[in-house]
Length: 440
Ligand code: GLC
Image (tube, rainbow, N blue to C red):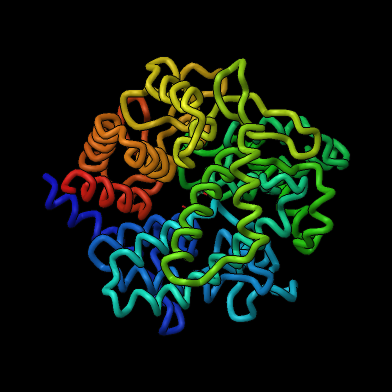
């Protein structure tokens, strides 16, 4: 089974490969539906490519940074490929810091670039490795610098997302619920009108059944966030006054781990990081426990405006397992939630929302389904912490689903059946990483 599954997964990555302007290359999530270069999709593809084709991986990460990174350091969630609608929606070229040659979005996505860079560097031959790090490391460090310079609104080392899509989990119920409750300083009638417009123009529910996509409410508030950001010209000082600012636990877990990797790479490459960054890295770790809730025995995202925790459990609550370095009791509590059959311990993979939550939908989108991104992060963290049996069993059920249903976008945590697009690079990437883990 494994050999042909491996070949099929590489084929998916090859099918979705797009070359841009000669020198650039990337793996689109699914050429037929998502043609842009997406930050965390690309990071996963880079990790998968690095296993056997590290030069290909190096070219992809370099393309993302060289095409997409803004002058102020921001790395957008998408470098737009051929879509006038998306280019119009984000209108990045109006912003002086944005790239001139490519349209991009104006928001970022989970900061997984240090890990992708490191996986690649480790696989490159010695003579290419230093040159790759020299070219890439400062760009990734500059991105982390941007996150702390512009998104650490409370100056406590926990950065905020200002758009739900920055978490990569579009309709994560904790954030979706919060968005429906806050005061957007917009008349209700305008929100109702926007909801009607979104219902008419959204494309995903024309291609897939509505119960397999984000709810209309979640998509409406996400669109509202887009319109407001666009209106501020993505200006950090103005974003600091926006009503939606969340210290997302998933985003900060990824940041904490990628800070560690960045520091390790900088040591190895003899390229010291600034004191500002090193201080911020420490602050993120020191203040991480502000996101812990003793009553529920898990971590939650925190409203940066009021300081309140958003106590709706989602897979984001488990993500500190990827960050690692947790107080022992907190790690044990998360492992218990992860394995509880009534909660996250589903038959197939780790559901994006626990099975016993009132918010859980089947198959749902980020409010139900098992996704490759989050399963990648959690298995990575579990393997690093030495939970080999648990990692192996999560890898096995994931691989069985991919083998049976193909590289689908997301899966039912109850049956393993696949949904969404059908040649999805992040799924193929995680399968290749899991296959590699099985043999090492
Ligand atoms: C969806 C997912 C997001 C992903 C993108 C491209 O928007 O929610 O996480 O990056 O598709 O695959």
